[in-house]
Length: 372
Image (cartoon, rainbow, N blue to C red; front, side, top):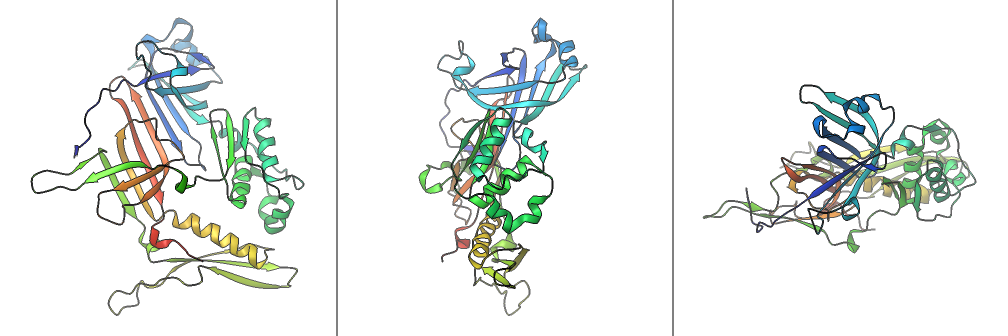
């Protein structure tokens, strides 16, 4: 596939900080930024012969705890720049040090600081605190800066709905995601800050363009990407329905809420095989009818978000695209031409290969939008 973009001079630069100090000798950086639930990860490879004397291969072999920050950017002066001229894409703790004696390289890999919440389990419930107060307290307990939107409902109200799940020992990350889900928020870590906020509103953003021009009679296909795969989940395209079963002691009886109440069916010829919606069911105790409907609506949106996917979208590295962001695919002449939420972005910067990124994104088809 031929790019239709005019070639432009690119001078991407990178920098690595190890335990807060700038270190030379790196030859490749890789950052994988994920949407919300999973930790962001990194990998950095150093040439052993280029490491400074105080940070040589022997020094790496002795370390028991390290923190890495990776920077990528396009400084105004590519020959004279500092990390402040670049963008920090991850700050995290090293999980592994790998020494390759044949290649004489040292590689480190690890996760961002969401790992401190993922690895720490607790039985605390904080019933008299709000979700935002809990998120703020957990962030501060690990030395992170809270970037939190205030909420007003004490979580004890939620425990009445889902007390069995919350009674068990859980990781702090599970608790934060549980509370974010109830509040209609997302939770993520970037740098040394914890974010607990409403998700991205696509109506308020300018989507990043992913453009395709089909082949013609005299020219082949053109695009501003090097490779991509488009995937549609057909079971969801048939239509889905979410059913929430609950029992509320105030009513002394059980009930079921379905959302949406009417779903589309598809028949192939006269056959009924494969027709009808796919049903997702869940039992959640102690809900009211309104709470059950709200729960069903949120779960429905989570499910249909997997319907249409962009996978393996390979592009030149671009710092303007980050998570969370929106993509807009155009030009294919198919149902895939729509807006997508970025799901993961893997960036690679090396002296041999330059600066590249591979994107995954997802969004529900406009056909799956429910109108009340």
